[in-house]
Length: 195
Image (cartoon, rainbow, N blue to C red; front, top):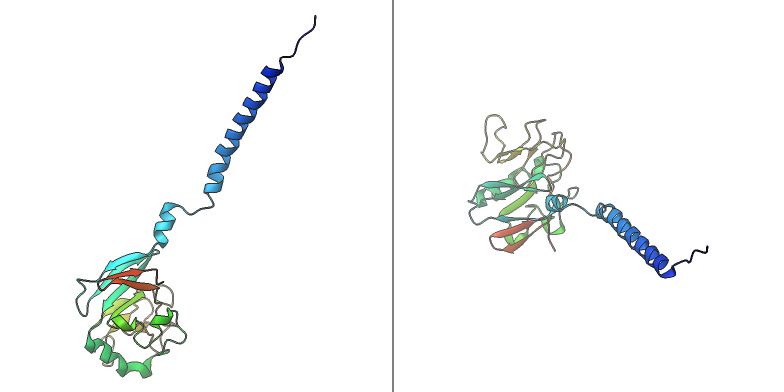
């Protein structure tokens, strides 16, 4: 008795097995390849943040979050800006030569020239990462008669002026970090993007 081989059936089974194997490889490879790309949550954490400054009163500060860190937006008054010139001799880096900021904020006010009153910075002390307190008051008893307003870090006593420039003789080594930012309109700022 001779068994005849059905070549068409054999070909069909070979192709079907190959197709099922191919689908299995794609099914296994897809999540593996997808793991190389950041999740939507991770993308959102590093995404730029838009800030509406239309209701930001002179002398007021608002906080937003970008990349999991606080970002301060301060609308400085003319008096606040004028007072900063009085303390330049008490600062470690008044010209911000050693500090981290975009080129357009590399000036004494550490802000964009076309919006000099609006100051934006990461609200993280450059010493050990605490978040300093906003202290716009003038000459308070706890900070001394020469205090013209700024930020005080309660963790270890670092002091910064209203441009985020660090005072001499405090633990923080550098000025506060200025993140990249740009104006979309006269009242909307995008933090995290500047080109």
